[in-house]
Amino acid sequence: MNFSLEGRTYVIMGVANKRSIAWGIARSLHNAGARLIFTYANERFKKPVEDLVATLEGQNALFYECDVTNDEAVQHTFDQIKQDVGTIHGLAHCIAFADKEDLKGEFVETSRDGYLLAHNISAYSLVAVARAAQPLMTDGGGIITLTYLGGERVVQNYNVMGVAKASLDASMKYLANDLGKHRVRVNAISAGPIRTLSAKGIGDFNSVLKDIEEKAPLRRTVTQEEVGDTAYYLLSDLSRGVTGEVIHVDSGYNILGLS
Ligand code: NAD
Image (cartoon, rainbow, N blue to C red):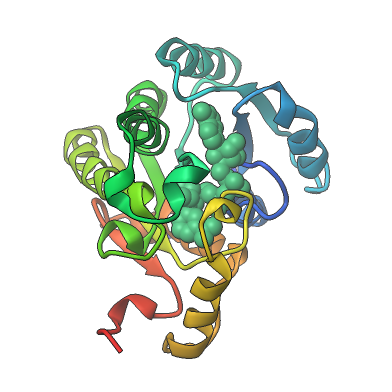
């Protein structure tokens, strides 16, 4: 079995800057020989993403704007990708958003609008993207999304984003069931906390990192590269029998009981 990704094309959604988990995934797939397609939320991210990707030697990437809150924009993006490259072999969905106000204090204070916003961008978007991308995976393929322990357990300040991640995890499983007949696998990586633009919005994030360093079995936080290499596994034939799964890349933190 050949585990190189030469000759394969993957869509990476959610690179904002060099700290993004999506960027770690992009580098792992690039190192494995994949051709990459990047989507970004709006014009503001275009140049920074293009500049970052220019550092990937020999990468002949394509770029598209795609605001995942807009069904027409999502469909248009994948119509364009189909026109430009034809077949894709996988997709990494690395997108989430919630109002900063909803990422501190008590969950019970979450407004209806804040709840819907977080679910719209962070959970429903996977469904919309999977529906638009699947027809391009004519050789079968893999879809991965990024989740967090706060969707399985109560994590202080994670609040509405935890509830959205629970919805994302369930959506991932239902999608795995629907798309399996098209030879498309759908999985999630539950990453340990990593300092990124999105993480900045979470109240007292430093103490979350400190807790991992003190208590996780590996006694350290994880890196974008480590998440990237697990994404490579999930998007390659190495994981050909795996779908509907959540893999924790979190230094083992999720196995701990209360202390
Ligand atoms: P990031 O800020 O680098 O990436 C989030 C991305 O979501 C950005 O590129 C942003 O532009 C994009 N986005 C937001 N709204 C969008 C929209 N309407 N349309 C299209 N794109 C939109 O942060 P990150 O931490 O790399 O986040 C990537 C994923 O990883 C998220 O799902 C996040 O919840 C998850 N995650 C992060 C951590 C962590 O500690 N950083 C841990 C576990 C899971």
